[in-house]
Length: 215
Image (cartoon, rainbow, N blue to C red):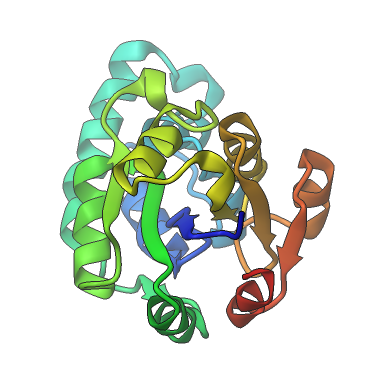
């Protein structure tokens, strides 16, 4: 069976969102006089949802549950208003999506970013491309849990084996494997090629349009 659909991760795969994420988190950290972090450091913090990013960004001695919840809410309040301020698609992504649509490939997004923000960013930057867009609404279903990926394949009326899953972190590769989808990594995202290889990516793209070769 040929591949009939592609599920994309969002941050680090479709869009470079690191500045908006980092700026929002650093604003909150500064308000508490906590140390801030560089964009490069935030690339290691992302991937497991914003609450996990908050935990990683906080000083180790400030990670009590109540403080985590307070800082998370403050960060989300800021980030929700600026999540598309500097966030942009990576070069070649729009061309890839247009090619995939021309070939009648079904498209979806699955992110560990909160569901509301995932949908907001996709609607702002990629209107009319995706048949399914899912963010995180239940911590138990967070990637690499394959539940949402498999549900998306059902929504698209396809078996998981007919779906390519594209992402930039080990979590995405593990999600693909757990869902029995083709695991494809991207080299332009937030993690390096070594992480993708070690996690079991079957292919690693250097440019978005290389995905067409797999179809």
